[in-house]
Amino acid sequence: MAPVTARLYVIPGSHPCECAEAALRLKRVDYRRVDLVPVIHKLVVRARFPGTTVPALEVEGERIVGSRAILRRLDAIRPEPRLYPEDPELRARVEDAEKWGDDLFQPLARRVAWALLSRDQDAMLSYSSEANLHMPQWFVRAGTRPVAAIATRFNRAGDENVRADLRSLPAHLDQIDRWMDEGVLGGHTPNAAELQIGSTILLLGTFADLAPLLAGRQCVRLGERGFAPPVGAVPAGTLPAAWLPQPSA
Image (cartoon, rainbow, N blue to C red):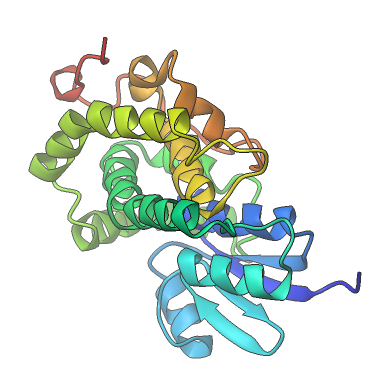
C-alpha cells in the first residue's frame, strides 16, 4: 500500500488534535506533525486553511479543518480499518455519539482545561514539554499568562460555566459507559465516536483533581486505545474542592 503523506497542525495537549493524530496512526498514514502555540495558532492556520482552528490537515492537495471533517476524509482515503461502520443503524448511532463528543463533551473539557491552566502556568508548559514550537523556552513561558487569559475568555471558561460543567460531568461519563455497554463504543477497533470521546477522556485523565470521578469507570479504557501516552498534567488542588462533584455510585 503506497503511503499517503500528510501534514497535521496541532496544539500540544489539544484533545481534538489527539483525535485526528490517533486516526492517522490507526489508518497508517504517513504524516508530519506541526506544533503551534495556543491563540497564536489562529494566525498560522488562517494563512493556510479555510478556518482558524486545529486540528488542520494537509493531505493529497486538500486542506481540511476540524477533527470530524478529517476523520471522514481519512475514511475515504484509506478505508480500512473503518472509522464509520457499514451497518446503517450502527453507523447512525456512532455518528450521533461522535457529534455529542465533538459538540458537547470536547468543549466541556476545554473549558475545564483552561480553568486549570489559567491557575497553574507551569502545568500549562508541561503539555508542550515534548513539542517543537520553534520558539525559545523563555518566550513560551512569558506568554503563558496572556495566552491563558485570552483562551479562557474566548472559550467562556469562567467560574460559573466551569462549575456547571463539573456538576454535569458524572452524568456525561454515565452516558459514555452506557454506549460502551450497548456496543456503540469499545468495539474491535476504535471508531470515529470513540476517537472523539476517548481523546477527551485522555485529557481529563491528566487533571489530578478529576481522578476520583474517573476511578473505576470503564470509559477510561477509551483514552488508552490508539492514543500516545499523555504529555502534561495538572496537580491536585488546582481547582477549589467545593467545585468538584462526588463520583457516581
